[in-house]
Figure 1 (cartoon, one colour):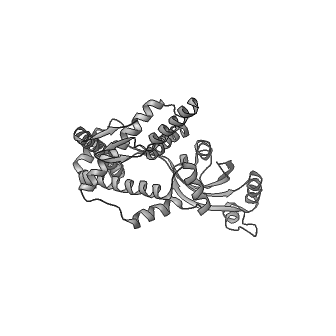
Figure 2 (cartoon, helix red, strand yellow):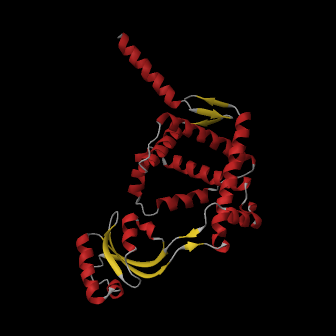
Figure 3 (cartoon, rainbow, N blue to C red):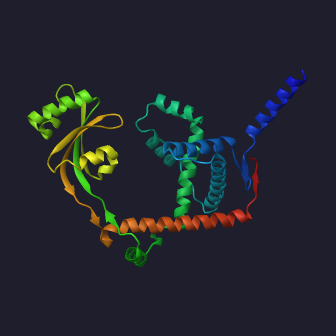
Amino acid sequence: MKYLLLALSALIALAACEKKPVAIVNGSEISRRLYDYALNERTGEHKARSAGFDMQAMKHAVIEQLVADRLLLGGAKEAGIAATSEEIEREMARMRQGLTEEAFKKELKTKGITLDFMKERIRERIVLERFVVHLVPDDSVGEAEIKDYYRHSMKPFLKPDTVLVRFIQTNTEEEARQMLADIVKTGFDRRADAPGKEKRFFVSDYGWVEPGIFGPEIASALKGIKKGSYGGPYKGKEAWFIFRIKDRQAGGPETLTEARDKIKAQILSGKRQATVSGWVADRKSRASIIMNL
């Protein structure tokens, strides 16, 4: 009986702990659910990249980011920055694109979250992004800064090799090899433009791209295809491909005009990171923060 009471007490304590917020920032609670969700997302990203990590350091980084977000959201509220329900629904629709209702519900269940929880995360992300722009507007980078950055950059700005491609995608290697045999007889474009009754393949005029977007193996193979010719079949993640290289453009040094947008984005990103970091540090020094981890 004694052990049963001890076990019951432990369960009650655990339940109370799970309901208790992991932190309270200026009266705004950070729930255990949000913390667990953010931690799972962060560890999942590292695992996907096969990158090692220290779990204690990861937990610390996650709670620090959540505290910073709470401070920033408070600043956004002071500045009158908000997100409308229409904006949240549009972003939700974009995220759900290509998913059936059943698949979407399954994904929510897998992540252990509700629809309302996801909508709140979307709202916060929109507000945070707007507040960062509010702190450092897009026009905060001047032409003189861009020119100076270009002139004194330790690394030259280079444009990559690009190819103008068209490809045929099939579901199986057998279909791809049959398609290749047809192409040998009729030509790539004629076969691509004549799907026939089976319609068991997909054709895309992909446009100008860096070969690397198709993965390292296909990118390496595309280097060997001459302009105007084709090659394949190549295995992708979930399909087979036959590529036609319509044209090529060699990479090389970028002019200031070509690199301007890239440079502006880099300078702007650096300014925003520094400004946000300083803003959060200042607010944190004056905030009421209660940690319950």
